[in-house]
Image (cartoon, rainbow, N blue to C red; front, top):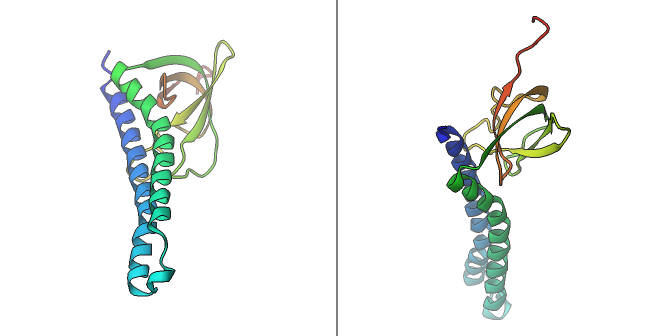
Length: 165
């Protein structure tokens, strides 16, 4: 089976994570830059911040950020490399709340066996960040394709109505 489209969806989600990482890194690096500019122009030498604390700030901040974003990105890379895509059937439910650019949206799928799987809607780089055509808000029954390790939903195919409508 050709999983090209699913791989592209996961790559886009991974790029969105990397973009978030770079923005956060830029904010961390902004503190020493501002300190340097203010220290050079406005403050006397004895009132300047210690370089040691600025270096510690950058190292701790970048390390913490790397840990957080690696936790989000490594499962995506594993799914892309091994094409770990799973097809299940059950009840799909997406919560109705405002989507935030810095957070993945939760989707719940209750399998026909009764097991419940929490999934994430992959981030998109373009606006709007939610594709409500492919992933409607509400409760539906159908087939769901998702990435096994990262639990990103890749496709939802609703069942045909059986009541004649």
